[in-house]
Image 1 (cartoon, rainbow, N blue to C red):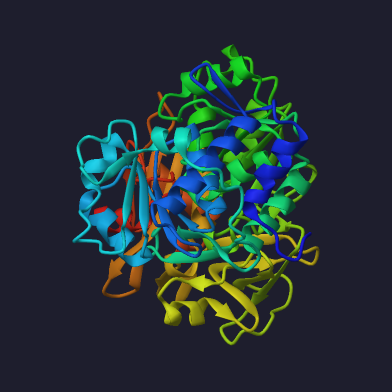
Image 2: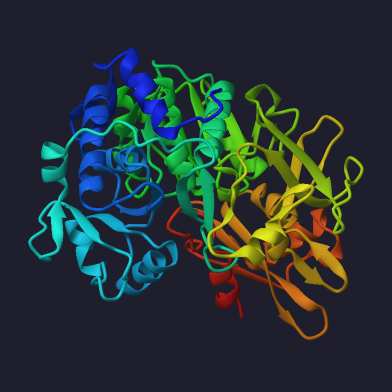
Length: 508
């Protein structure tokens, strides 16, 4: 690897190898690497003319689209860092993110423009670029105009330890924090993922993840690095559209979070769709139960299933479970990806013996620079022993990780520390269970009691007393739920992760 790797260099290399190769497909429209490379260079030059300087941060507030890719690589080529933000936002939330990030420009869509605060509210913002109609604001300029007429700027020189992205965490355990990811961090992670997934220019991902999500960004970059292509096939809100897109575009890969695959395997007519082109499936974003993993494998017997684990602070990925170890290490989050070293430590940072539960720490060139404008949180996360992930689990003698939950999600009940996954994996095995989540709720005697939320499979009826009896056969008494609620769905974040904070509020 170059001593100063560039994230946008991945696009440049692929475009030089095969400029006419397809990079993006959506609604029947195909885009090439040459188009992405040329248009992002035009945008880069235009951003510099608008006052965006090297080292600035530019907010990218766009939904799934080719313009997102142009914007991302254009910002990097201008020497600035990308701040990917959820386009499903509100003015107050967007103003906070813009103010905290110090973004000097915003690239957004016409439907989101009303949420972008005026310059006197967020003083750092000097330019507003709009995909679509920009007439609603006198200070806005059209994205298409910049791409069509902007002077070409292929590279302003940002690389290595320079900031590439200010990636906000999901906020599932507290307020979102801005992880500062350098070019070296992201490129290192991308190359590791390309290596273990064995991605090539022949691969085409069925893209259902949000692009602003660190997992989604990682999927985009890995396929651009490999010279492959991205097919925007919709979201799992409309599964038939996704399945039709996989078949139509002969997608070789599908990446999702556990809820993606829970919905997929619950479809009665899954066998009616031609999914034979799928070579691999990747899962990350949260732990996937062994029961769901087996159902997914049975539903897609021809595809290699990669169970993965990572964090925003690690540029996306820390571990992967090789498909050949899926049965032998069921329930594991896998082993360290190439270039990453993992350990499990106690509260003092000392490594513990194999099989002992502790906190997972990670070292590698993919680990963030720190949290933007938060030195205290940075000092807590980046310790001499490595990145303190906040995830609790154990490592076996072969280096495979078995997670039991996040430190903040641990249920402290009667002197016991109980990982929610320990309970959820047992319940997920029961007949008729579609999804399950366990959380701690206040209890005067125990400190916390266990509340269990269960979503039944379609057409199935579950009974709380029967579930409790089943738990009693598999779990010790101190891990038995105090409350069991049958619900239609579990609350999820914008990236599809389980929202445990909402469950704790909803529990009686």
